[in-house]
Image (tube, rainbow, N blue to C red; front, side, top):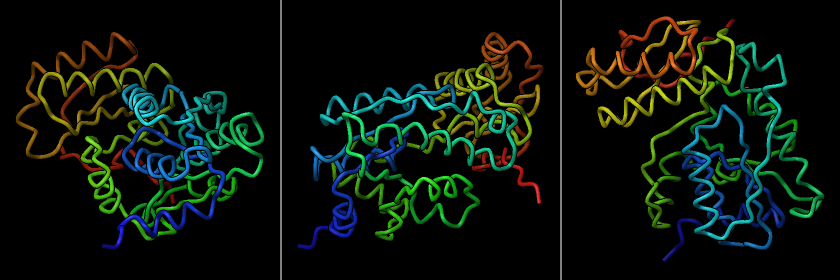
Length: 271
């Protein structure tokens, strides 16, 4: 029987020393798991700790590292010192990834990884049809994308997660918290913390798995799928308003978005 992972293993084999950038989402978790299991002595897993990374994502990476025996390095990127990122332009992700890869690059030539270690990302073929300025930053830092090289998309990754026996195979996508801020709305740690608190509370109160608390200036819009809208009643909105404004008092209003959930709605590309 042909191992469905062979093509990806072949691509990983091109990089005998590698640093896997792992956000805590299913894509990078599977990549880190496959890379480590194939060559544990040659694999370092790097995770950045910043206000933009959801707390559960960091906890998930740490738990995987303990369970799988990863050589995990927690790094701190500097995007919150970068005004180009904080102003939240249309290409914010470029500055985010630039700072991320700068931080991960410091591991090359350290006690953790040799100087020729290659940085790997969990980008996949489904990402290529979207506007992804972060991929430009990856190119500038000589980052490789094994999933893309192997022709893998999101469905292939989730299938591999099931083959690996990972309970997180159906983990909903959870992009960085800054993705909840509409383009042009300034990124602040307080706003991101408020988003994380608000989304966690909606899930806790309703059981809804996919929820976004998007911020446009001082207004919050709770976004869920059409089939989940009936769960978001006035009491839920009131509770979210109280929780989010206790973290970021500058927020004025919280309401259920008029439209159903759509990935990337807060991104406004300026032509």
